[in-house]
Figure (cartoon, rainbow, N blue to C red):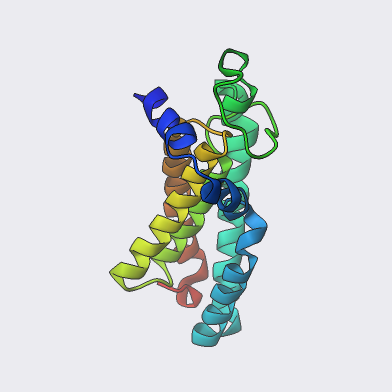
Length: 183
C-alpha cells in the first residue's frame, strides 16, 4: 500500500506546476514570513511575556522532536530515503538534493506537526483555523514525498511523533508558565 501511495504522490500526479512550486513550498525558509506574522499576532494579542514563553516552548519542542527523530530514531531504524535507494534508481523522481541517507521518520513532518499542534492547543481557537494549520503541516509533509525525499510511512511517523511531543511539551509549558501560559 505504501508503494502505491508513494508512486501516486511522486509520479502519477507529477506536473510542471508542482515540479516548480513544491520544492520551494516544502523549504523551511519559505515560511519565515508566516512565522513572523504569527509572532506579531501573538505579541499583539498577549504581550511580550506570554509570547516569549510560548516561543520558548515551541523552540524547545522543535529541538526535542528534531533531535529525537534525526539522532535517535533515524539511526536506530535505518530506513534509506527513496532518493538514495539503489533498487529504486530511475523510478523515483528526485526534485531536490537527497540530503542524509536516512528517512524514517521525516523531520519535516515531525517539526511542522509539532508547531501546528502547539498552535492549535494555544493560540488558534477557531476550528477552521485549526484545520488550516493541520492542512499546512500535512501539505508540507506530503510535498516531501512528491520531491522524492520520503516514503508515506516516514510522513505518518513524523506526524505522530511531532504531535505527541507537542502535546507533552504543551502540558509541561502549561505547568511551568502558569499564569503566563496561553491556553
